[in-house]
Image (cartoon, helix red, strand yellow):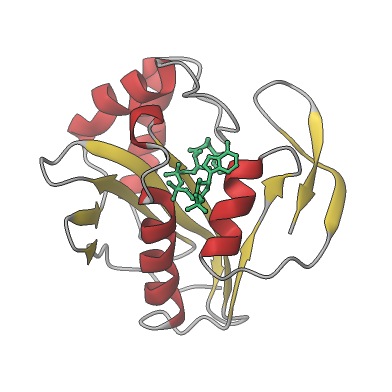
Length: 172
Ligand SMILES: CC(C)(COP(=O)(O)OP(=O)(O)OC[C@H]1O[C@@H](n2cnc3c(N)ncnc32)[C@H](O)[C@@H]1OP(=O)(O)O)[C@@H](O)C(=O)NCCC(=O)NCCS
């Protein structure tokens, strides 16, 4: 069980993680529709209306089991998405998820953003465990996990169905 959370903004230099806003729908949709934008994307977002519904959910932190951020750069442009979900303050654990827009990849955005979220989770939120799952084939995410300090614990067989409709093994 979790108490309601108050949305917070996190920063790391010019990288800002702020709560999602309604007017982010267009930029989110553009990122999804760009080449590579849907690779390993976790949520079902076939239409722009799906994105609007998803962002409406993500703006609301009142359930206390999810915290979601829009990562932006110096000019306020969308760089990516971060979330802690399945937050359980009794167990003091949560799961982290992330993606970056294709044009921003390979510049260290994901690692910096993941580290900022992890600092907040272990610090302000008092978590003692944050889990990160990625498909075995997702070598970019594996590198993000490794660089931001996560420890490989094991392989989960056919544990998640991704947007390609197939179940993939994941690494925890
Ligand atoms: C995974 C993802 C978030 C990485 O974002 P990013 O902003 O490019 O990551 P970073 O720039 O912080 O790179 C981190 C490391 O990963 C490496 N990396 C990036 N793409 C890679 C790839 N395709 N294969 C192997 N390593 C890769 C980078 O080189 C860097 O390591 P280095 O500093 O030792 O060179 C991004 O590729 C993405 O959004 N992918 C699609 C969605 C996704 O996979 N989300 C995670 C689901 S678990």
